[in-house]
Image 1 (cartoon, rainbow, N blue to C red):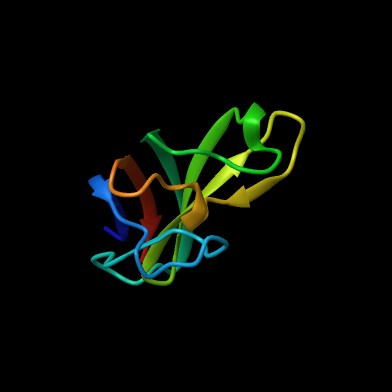
Image 2 (tube, rainbow, N blue to C red):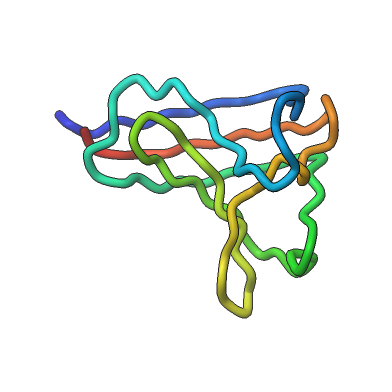
Length: 101
């Protein structure tokens, strides 16, 4: 079929080389995304800044050949997880995403 599911666990994530406002992206999907995918994510040792203290959920979005993370607020709106949200070398992200090629 054309459906792809990816499960990944990232430990001891370093934000070296990223600026604080740059979206966190995970590259290396096995196939290029034809139809945007969505998934779920669990994060440890991540500090959401700005108005995201009331964060309710975080989702993944698969686009092109990478995954990025959307931080969703209960009152609406969302923003990408940024490099400044990661704790140097102690953040952990586990995610699954499904998309079509």
